Length: 78
Image (cartoon, rainbow, N blue to C red):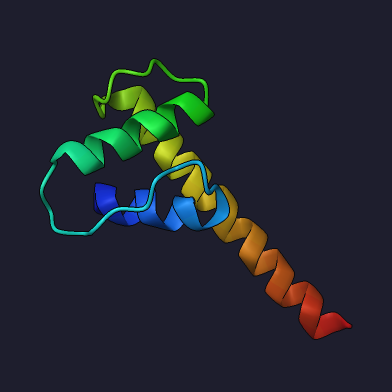
């Protein structure tokens, strides 16, 4: 998955993570969004997408996905 996709998806659920234009360019807006993500999730705030940031991006993404799946199943039951 693309970094900008993950950041934008997560920003829908965590407004303090800046949404950005998905243009495949790691420019100032993407770096700023990465820093806001890192700050929110207790990572080193350096704007670098290293292993810890990638791991947390995927962890948060899949946690949200699981919550959405749970909500869809729950709504079908009621």
